[in-house]
Image 1 (cartoon, rainbow over the protein chains, first blue to last red):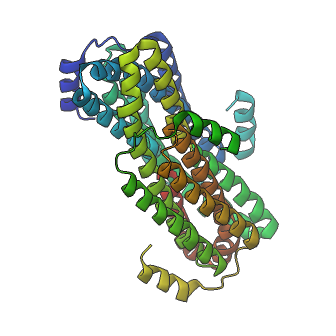
Image 2 (cartoon, each protein chain N blue to C red):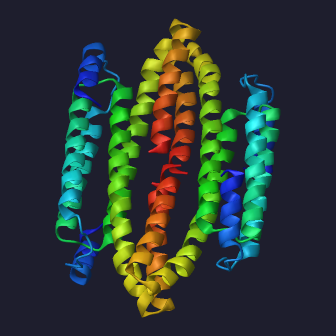
Length: 107
Length: 107
Length: 107
Length: 107
């Protein structure tokens, strides 16, 4: 994401308060950051390729698990709120979520 | 991967010399590490969920691209070597590679 | 899905009326069925493996596109209805949808 | 795949003889064709969306399993042959296989 997009998102959506288990997510993301450093060490030392790929798969799974958790919280918060405002409001949020899910499925 | 498995792999496979563009991979993995830190910041500040998911998709794509590049180098090096040793040797390496590909496809 | 599960689902959910573009989905699924028959022909005639894999990728993409469309309709219908009944009702439907999304992401 | 591409592939690669368990693949592909018909029935009767998505996931998994099996056979046959012809010949086949794997990973 570009800095510009991030800045806009920040202005609009800062402190939405939708993330209930923030410490849990931060802990998991720090572990993922550690996996990224571990991969650099494995490449630096030319570890066996298959072992590196196994590590990449583990890291991808960890990332997907974080994103599915955040998606569930988002739907419980933003999509539910929108649903109570009206069908049109809900449709916009659901389209946005479905597009994000499509990107996850294809990534 | 457990430390024990990593240690074994290290002993057996250290300095295989199969990674030709090591600096390129290290640069990409450092960028991925930076994305993991960026995600922590986004969760910390409760940025908009959809923007976080977009970032996760970008990071997953970057990881997959690294793993596909390493897989290609591995096949050009280890699988080709094994193919020249014999059908049985090739079959073992190809089974191992296919299992790793299956984990990538499903992760 | 087992016949038993399908029978239960049928009893509970028959004629939910949530699929707005039914003819479009049926047309796309008939095309997917045709792709499955095309794959049998390619394997029967031992067409080049890479061409078969390309066809499998196209078919998988077509399936995912159908499932993402149905998911969007489901959320606009069932999840929105549940959201208007209450937080607990919404949470149940959203958990169910997230579990289905997790299966799509990992399949 | 377009008919033109299929025709070319057919001319070039017909009867490669690389598929050892042809009957097994045909049986699995007929089952996948049956799943595609089952999905049409579920959409026709507006079965519960989540059950349809579960069926799509099962079908996608079955397709991926077929493609991974074919890929393994292809590498044992075509990639091994190319490896014995020379590094350049191997590199071309491995690049082609890696591109196909990339399409599977992203589909």
